[in-house]
Length: 208
Image (cartoon, rainbow, N blue to C red; front, top):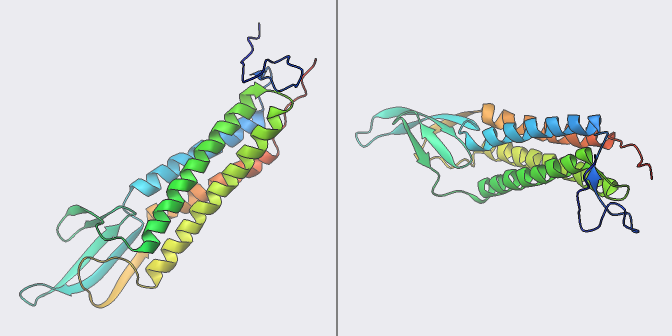
């Protein structure tokens, strides 16, 4: 027996806005959900780890000795391998704050896309299906674009020497964009792919 899920209107209301559990969940929608969920997990790992970039440079201590410093930087913290400690980023430049915001907002839109995908996949309504699908598709692609822009801003800023280094370097600073940065790009791609997959999702028409 199918128990209707009430969503403002009943499933047999005259305006047709009622929702009920779908007897034939969308397989394509389910695939889009899996891809989106994987992207969300990858992005969560990316923004909570410190290996967005690894910097190496020379500095001078109080005894005027040259010391090689190697630090792994994330969006919120960095780890100095010289002292072996994780340090909170106290003075963050504007571009780094923007990268944080783009990634967090991207994850929020990704979460919304995942919810809409679930509603489209497992519930059924002739009118709500279109809203769920378009919302899921647009949110997924938009989240991927935001995160990708964040990665571009981060990479460009680091390449221009704008990274907030806590110790004054002597000479050139060497850097490499590391695996946390790569994960953010992978997450962005997965988000966009899930949105594209969602575009091919279909639901059978309800039989009155």
